[in-house]
Image (cartoon, one colour):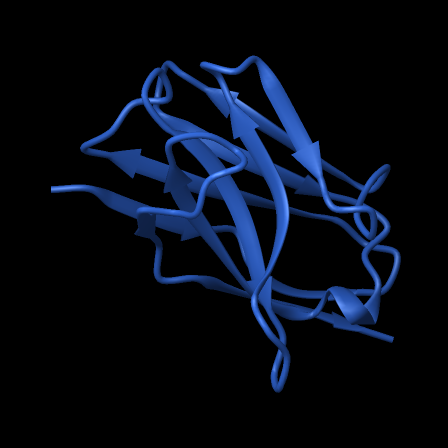
Length: 119
């Protein structure tokens, strides 16, 4: 059974930092890319970043480039999203997802973790 469990969300002031983690079981980074998506109230879910060990690539949406960093730890099968200089518009539920490659649609989703950035 594939499980993706997010952690690290919370409340932070604008300009602050948070580190999200996605712990994966039932899959390995050799076979799946891991993406972070987010969904704000009343808005569509949007992809934020992707890490693909098999493709040797990372990808960022333009609105987080330079502020968010994605990294994978193969030792404990965890993908982290380091977020700095957070803005109120970053407020959303953040989901991690597993897919065959960064350009594909996810096969598996986590339950999400809330990130709230106050102004």
